[in-house]
Image: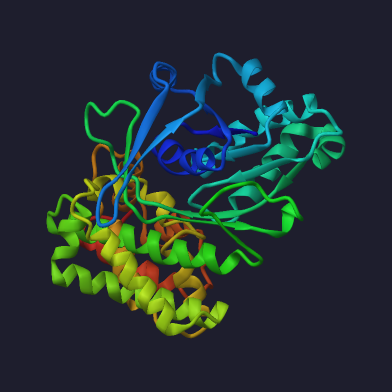
Length: 388
């Protein structure tokens, strides 16, 4: 069995690739970073090190890497004969992955079992996004190629922080992980992925993860940055910050309970588990890494506006989420392009324009005015925006 995985970074090697290795797949990593590809091909094994309670080391073997920018034909040949294709590249990069998969499908023996495709991204229904990008890339050939693949959405969760210097291609991760996969698209022959969780309805798992793990992680980062904390663990050691993070997550849990019928006590235990993970002080996870790309994190269907919009539509409280949004607006990192853009927008545009452009909310949405007020408050702190 063979799996082609797009994205040979820390998530690719330390999570998705690890579990595919455990399933017995021959691993082919695809990446555009030439130094990383060369480093992977220079070794015949790497170690995934879990740090924290119960952590173990696992050695991964049976892999190789291809530079897709330089050796696209080689990659396409690998896809044509693969059993599984996965990604961990970021949702915005899927459009660049799609043409390679389409080219591989075109070379695939039509009598072969369908290629099993899963996009393992921090986004809702990312595999559907990849499928649509593939459809665009295929053009008129889509009808002939579509049947050569099956597509399953997934929900993935593992904290993989910035790696220590000199670690080579070894990866440091937390012990906890969750990989939930739609069962239905695979019929009676799902991929062999030990410790993955196949489910009939993925939606509750996706939103529970996005609106708890991602919302909580980013909230801790933004409050921590404002307080001068360097790491997520240090931020949550501050009981005031911990309380503000908990307030936001209680609101997302209330939404999950109403929307998906999830049990309130189970959600409370899940929140506690998540916060304990964030407090793992042997994970070198900084507020700057977690807080980067605030424009994406504040977009319409992401971890703040997404749950807040759904909550207020149902008459649920959003004060804690608005507090987190305020902290996100104050995130000022000169080394992060999105942070720089956000601060520029706050200084040069009026509050309504910033709210519309950043959040994607309609002006008549019940959340719009609440967020606009938060934006205006941030602009007053900056001494900007009123006359933009």
